[in-house]
Image (cartoon, rainbow, N blue to C red; front, side, top):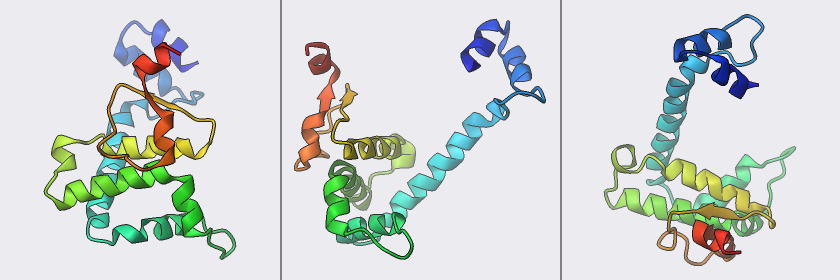
Length: 154
């Protein structure tokens, strides 16, 4: 449906006008960039905050996010389940601690880390042209992060 609006519009302004109609489910399309920037800014600030915390506490803090009725999942289970995401986050934090400026040089750190949460599903595979071997070295999920070339040749 959104693609139809885009294809039928003669100009980008026409597209935005269509998305703002009262019956549209695609409102605020003209704000997507600022919404994205706001979320990205919040997450990069969080990365800087995490850089001041203990790396060992990451699985414990992540387990707290999955608290249910006062019960916490076992942090070791959480670390195993999200091992690639946590290992990538630890690497990102280490980079920030040693002077990296993700806002300036690597705004994709947040997106990459979020992508690796999908690997908690044992059937998921991440296909990428990026090389994450410097960031993810020990996670058993590493074998499910494959290059586009490997994917193509399957």
